[in-house]
Image (cartoon, rainbow, N blue to C red; front, side, top):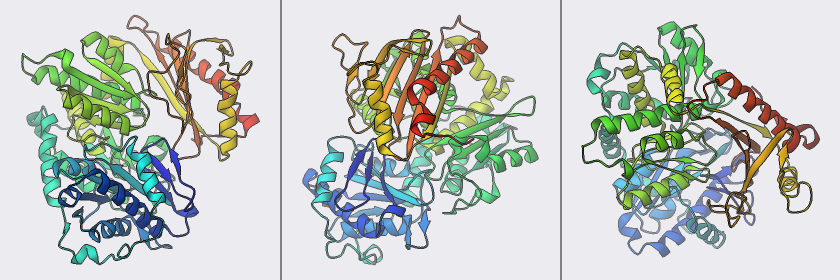
Length: 567
């Protein structure tokens, strides 16, 4: 979830997962950071009578702003100072860590809550807070709204809020790095199924950490699984807050930002490239094909592989008494429906959530508390949760799991791409495409979506898009769903964001939504075919035609001044 804080009085709640403090619009980010934590302290003190016994976890990435003397590490110290001054124990990592370490530490240390100071793969000018509750999942309502209220009540800095020295002098400061790193790597072994094979594999892996935190931790994860260390991309191995070798520090952008990794892989005769984003909670994967070209997998394609692998491993290694009806996998509603297809055939449960891993994490915790077994969850933006040690997306564990999968498939003379084809042939092709338009004018974004809600006449949604008939419309912003008897969306309404989904008569499902952290209108489209529909080319052509109609008739980029995604 996102709190954008451009001024003291204007606090806008958005959809995603992080409290972003955008440096270019804030006169004093350090001051805002202290006030934000004052509000959070006030709320946590109200919620937990034992807050001063349980403590608070603080992690940070490697971002830094020279001009404002504002690095993630300094924000972490200011965060700790606010709480230490109030007598709250703070588990402050002494070194930068992957984002997944914070929710993991919250649960392991039984802390009341925690924050990770990161802007993930956003531009270098950004920084922010990702907030986790005692359950190890990102905060959801009502905690988000109540924290906002408390922030607005605490706009004057308290005495001690600026005393960074408290971190070094207070007996309440504790460094959890060694303990958490050790038990995290031990927990990873729970999802390692072929350690002996891993020790013998001839496959080489390239890893890039995109100038972020991932290098040391991915190396340790490979060791935990019995692998030789992956080969790092030297220019991107060490932290660099300027992200100097990439135009955009987001591995989701594909081959254009993986250039150094792919060239190193060719030099080293390595077939698989693994890319963690700067805070190591996302993973991109590329594989060299027999024709010498590189395939960069989409998040949906990787999810098909992970889902197949985690279920196959559960079946092969579970006890005979294990009940498939007790097994769950989850995905956000804008992600591929491939897990649903696998679940229908194999007999386990599949559930959808609103976009954002905060919804997945909270739902997974509910399922676990009710005795259910969750194997895997994902969001299409290359966010994966393998197992349930961390109730958030985790690029470190995902990297080593995909490496084990590739090593296993190598013994069967299969590549990841070939296995993906087998999955689609077994469960049905799911051909998807995701992209976005930039729009820096909020009124324009609102106008685009309001037109869809008042298409032919007031309060009417489109019945077709070009030549393609629309079967159902779901508008999560307003809570409307034409497919339901009561016309109400099963997913909870989310009034602070724009999201409308169209189900077409030809089987295509397309969603238009805004981003909570970037000035984007995103579109997600997927053709979901039955196993007997094996004409991939036809499905791809149909998908492309629907997308073109969607852009021309609904988004109207020329008319609305939308900027096409640069490739």
